[in-house]
Length: 101
Image (tube, rainbow, N blue to C red; front, top):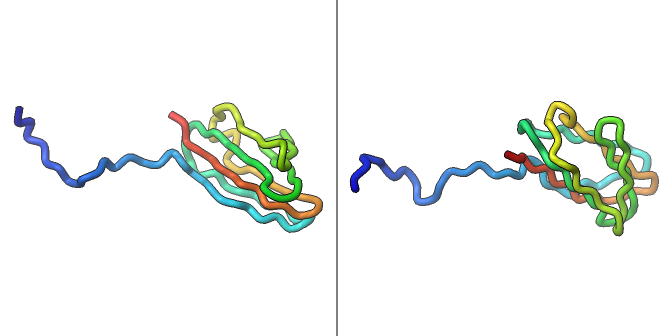
């Protein structure tokens, strides 16, 4: 059946759910704030790949190390427009923020 549609690309233009994905290197005692790109609802995952660190989401501090990672519930963006990371001795934190439908 001819629907009168025109193909404009070979692949669909689907937006990636990944809003932020990076390894954050923390210098001892120096806090970093990461802005979260807008999506109505987000899920945050973090793990320390080296050292130990603290993830701050709003007023909640979450310890991270090689055996303690963090995966949030689905959160409204206005509650987590930015997050904080700090380490007392230096660390690398793998951070992933995804937009959730």
